[in-house]
Length: 312
Length: 215
Image (cartoon, rainbow over all chains, first blue to last red; front, side, top):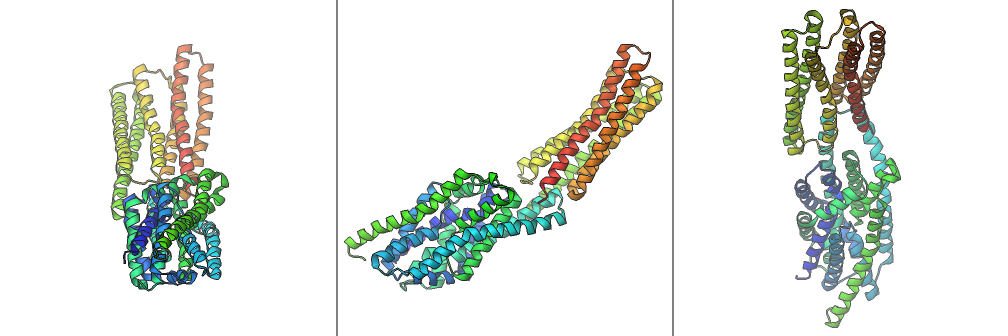
């Protein structure tokens, strides 16, 4: 099943790009070193995908019916666009890249399910908003707790380090559960892969991306968007993890990038909007618009090429 | 994680040792001043000054070790900047008492007996300012909630010291002593008063560190 290679490539791109969303703030604030974060992230992504990844496969299968060759086009188009964005250090949405390509394929085949697409797009919009709201609530709840417990200087660092490890691992679990459908979801429909096999292969590919190419985007998310201290980093990751996990339970693959940006903007709102680096924010928004567009354009080119040789 | 906790407790021990040496420098300083009031500039005063210097020097060595440990072993990433700033500010306290005893020893600053009680009072206020700063440090390292109350106490001591300083300087300059002696008396008053000034600056820094950790 050579077509699966594009899914593995997409998984690698997703890992390289989205690990930043769960451990970027912790690594950039130097509370956790890169390798500890990368290993924890890889392990929990795999656990999350295997334990809670099946829901998302159904949503993808409803979006557009496709053959293994079409799945190859979708995954390859998405992988190329996400890899390009990772190269530029931009945290982007793999979900958007996959859906951008799927929508293009659906339009070409005239079988686009607009109902499923609407559900996905609504969830995309709800992701950053939900993450921002979760951030604001968690910021004050944990703030009250910290003020009440009044940890010493030493305890403060130790508690937050532990908090970042737990929240980051939870975030990685949610990432695996929610996003593995982005990677191997298109291969489940055509009957090529069982959901369990798709979860294992997809999450292993994500883990590989985390371990080999995620440092660049981690620094963009953690350092350049807004100045985060360890406490706000902890809150941002926890809020993102909660948001993505909720969508994993609903069964809609959403963007961890959108969730973490929503969470970080929530921190910005709590601490005053002047702390937000607008230039970086605009670069990220550009990435959001560009990713599905680029992915759709690549999918179109691949579709034409495959049509010429009679594969689709 | 357990590795970091072990390293952090080693660091905590180093900090305890450092502050212990600072306390020792102040004890020796107090002892030196008492020796001076009772016996003048004799061998005993020189020995006390020497002891004060040794404690200050040991504190300096420990401070450097703490700095190396904090950055070399990547400990307390969130708090190390604050901790280093605190130690740097605090380190000015043992420095100033060493400066006072050595300046007295080198200049043999003449302090007339009629001023002894004034200087004793000034010393007491300033040494209390130091101990209150220590209390604020202890609070920061154990229960930061209490820190802000302790820093206010240091501020009050500094104001009290200012009042005593002004009184002694006015008294010195209203006396019949020659101008040179008056200037030496004033300089000694200002040097001793510098303890509470530096204690106040250190306490301000401690207060900021504590406030930063309140959400």
